[in-house]
Length: 342
Length: 111
Image: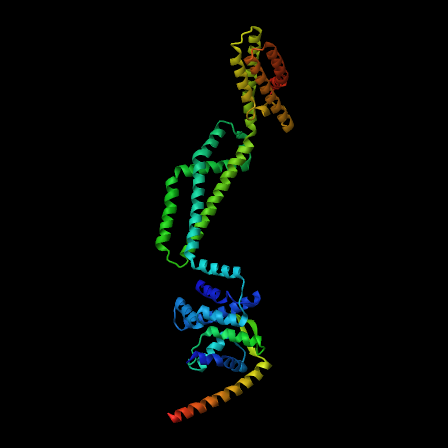
């Protein structure tokens, strides 16, 4: 009945008067035309022919509109008139809207499939490796909910990895059968419904997959701090050893050996300031304490810059001062590294 | 039939039909078609501007009625003023017909 509505749009778009009245006029004309269509159909005409005959008998849209405008006045709102014209134009372009909807749903399904494939190939295996290595705390599997998520990831990986052919062939065959066997005026809408359902189903898979990855990783992440601590302690010891040998070189006035040693110390300080290392050196899981530790490590780095500058200037006095300041700042870090792990 | 001739008589026809009973638009069109054995072939869309004009003039009154089928129809009934107007129009129509007939008879007689 789009044709009927288009006709009514053309007839009624210019009528003046209150909206309620215009709506009544449109309703009245529609009822008349529906009666006429029913009458012609009862006389044996098929649907489209009956409608066309009813419209022909009713009159050309421009002529009927002119007569209605003569009675009710003419609407002068340019925007409304343009909007109605646009509506008429776009209603005619039904193929445009259905094609657009098909295209968009196809694109959504494609992107969803791509995202799932990417995760199955690259992310889930990494996740599984982290679990096997114990980097993600295996204790999270004690929780029934988390276990379900992790098993979901394993199942997804298994199905996608072992049954890839079926995952491609079965939908393709179903689609082929649909296109081949289904003959209906509503076929485009049935196809859109099917595509929409697939898009929603894939979205559900993605949401569950993302939740499984994020929740499992987040709950398993505290183990990272424990893993980081030996590494952080190693960097503290390396830093301490580098500076100790630098102090020894200063005593021996061995200026040539000093640049390499300060470079080693700077490297260790830089590595120490990265990632979870400062957190692992903090006794309490307290943001203020962690920030204090980060600040101390940054200060250590700055003192080493001063040490490097003194070495470049071959200034023993300045170097001694810089090293003393370094030790003042570095002392608490070394103490933190000596404490047992929290 | 010449639709221009019909245009001038449409108000008269509508008032006359509604003087029988309340009717909705399609019913009016169908009755005209049926009672004239299809002699009046008119643009049905012209009916509504005339109905609305008569309603605006207070000669007829319309009201929506919902049928059991869920369809809504706007029934029109003739008003007291409408009956007076119908009487006047019928008088005019009779006079017009008589005058036209006299001219036609004379013309026909001369021919």
